[in-house]
Amino acid sequence: MYAICSKQRINLSRQAEEIIRYDIDCFAEDSERVKFGGAVNRIFQFFCHRSQANIPAALLEERKKLEMQLTDMAADDESKKRVIKFLLEKKENELVEIVARLTSKKTSPNPTTLYVQDNNREYLESSDIMQLVGKYYRNTWQFIKAVIEEYAEKPYIEREAIFFSDIMQKIRLAGENELIVSSGGSRFMVRPYGVETDALSTYNYLVGYSSRIQGDGKQESSESLASFRIARISNIVALGEACPLSSDERAIISNAMITKGVQFLVGDQTEIKVKLSENGMREYKKQITWRPLCNKDKSIGNLLVFDCTEWQAYVYFFKFGKEVEILSPENLRIRFQSMHNEAANVYG
Image (cartoon, rainbow, N blue to C red; front, side, top):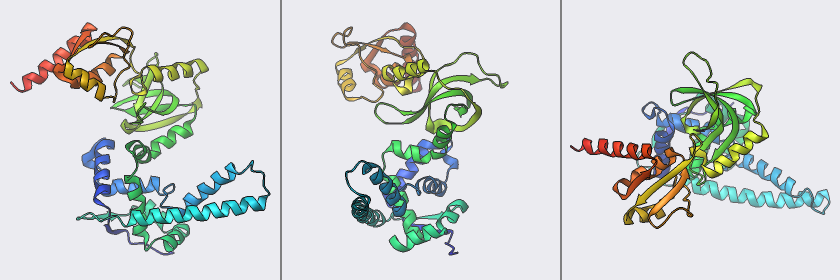
């Protein structure tokens, strides 16, 4: 069996390097402890099987898709085979062009030395991958570059799903089984609804009914709707027994994701009244991320009314500073006042 060198400079583009360093800061619980090479190995491990840079795997998926699409085609099997052969040859040429573009990206001025971890080295030394490399690449390192460059071109939400493929896979395999989720230093028992994204496709969330597990290991009796950022889950364990959500519970969750937003499922909705300045109104119209839905029937001019959780109102409006005044509820108004006073005290 051909053995690859486990240490070599990997000639990534500056864009790819910057994206990976950004993702380390966003995804890692302790970014100081996650090395660049470790992140590259993780990305390659989880993405190499479904990357377009893996041309044989991509063609296999394309074949499956074409066969499904042509199932009801009014033609004999030989005709269908000829159509599939033609379309796959066309697809292969497209993939070869994609690979050429990815591998020709200008190298960063200071390329990083990468140590290939054992699991990735075993994969790269397999006969299938050696044939892939021999047909489409100059060497194994060029294949690695193509996979990582392709990852770096993807939107944030897709990169997050790739980076946390192990967590996502555990959730999928668990099905309707209860999950013990570790997040933010606490543990929770979760009956899963599934993995969902917010309305703007910003982040991935595990959604379900949740109850906190106390320090003594006992589970709190009451459950509530909850969503957990996939990137904030440090560990997840599936239990052996199925505990499916009822159709009513699934309907409640589905409705709550529409009315509250998947990232703001925790907490009850309440009526929030705010007063915006002229600048505040301009910012309100521009800043749509995490913006709560306005109750237009109750709003007049710059006096806006929202039906949302206090947490969503806090997350969205706090950055407006002096351009917004919370009118009600009183406890949220006091919270804003206290937080702004504390911020002002920092500057004396």
